[in-house]
Amino acid sequence: MTLLLCIIYLGFISLGLPDSLFGTAWPILQPRLDVPLSWAGFVTMTISGGTILASLFSDRLTYRFGAGKVTACSVAMTAGALLGFSFAKSFPVLVLCAVPLGLGAGAVDAALNNFVALHYSSRHMSWLHCFWGVGASISPYVMGFWLARDLRWDRGYLTVGLIQAALTVVLFLSLPLWKKADKTARPEEARTAPKPLKELFRLRGIFYVLFSFLAYCTVEATAFVWTSTYLVRVKGVGAEDAARYASLFYLGMTASRLLTGFIADRLGDKRMTRLGYFICFGGLALLLIPVASPLPSLIGLAVAGFGCGPIYPAVIHSTPTLFGRENSQAVVGVQMAFAYTGSTFMPPVFGLIANYVDLRLFPYYLLFFAALGFALTALLHRSRKNADS
Image (cartoon, rainbow, N blue to C red):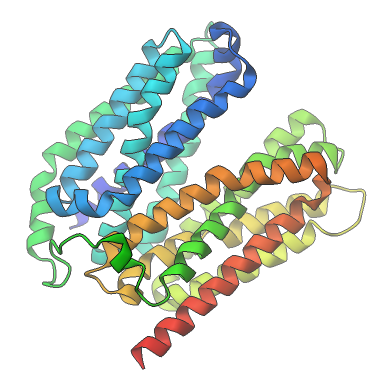
């Protein structure tokens, strides 16, 4: 199982690799394709739509083919999509390639998260998501390397696509390890029939966990998208410095997932989730300090990111315990769909608030959804406790 775990870590690095590519390449792509700047949204929304759709069907896919084949085929889809991006000469081709990229990302995300939740301890779930951060950190450097050489954005996509293709080969070669893990699975978790959504929605506490995921991912994605703008227009930070400082939230989150992995098994998923939210609240509170200096906000961003780090992995890892191992793949798939819904649609909602009300509401927006996520998680654990008593 140790070798398989290493391969799963590689799988999550591959999941993070494409996430930062498009945003890095778009400033060069947009004038070359001669399309409006806002058309980037068509690509990102297509990717998100595919991801949500694949997450909802992940239970059926995993039941029919197994987690190993779903992961291998999904990574193959993302590899093909990235290679397609590298050869794209028109905007419609980019949108077309975004379809398999989103579908592949959603299927592998749900399959790997559930597989680790079933077969490995909480610390490995935390480190798994840390490795996603490693992948998301690598790709901008890869793209930056090629952009510095005659603005060859296509070589950036080609390089990452070839990395994904190599990983696809490794995943297909590892299929016997996945089959072995399936054979040693407990009877209640091995190849259980897919759950219809209407049956899934009857599970006690299911809506608490789904909307807590949407709320948490709203915090995470909104911080990623709007931090730089907030620092420039509200805190008076220079644009170049703000771009660097915006990574503090992300770096804090990645560092947290690495460090909290060492204590996750000892504290347990419920305590890790609470601890994460409390630290996040402390960080966001620093953004509210009414001083001219941006220093409290910068510290607050890093602290808030550090607090967010363990929340997503802990809630995912607790799914088999809370809803039953036989239901976990279906629940995780719908959790992923709600997570991507939050990260896709809620940052633009804040964009409307910033445009028509006030950008200074940024920390209040984050605090509201962090508090909502915390409250829903508490209600989830209370409802499941009542169901078991």
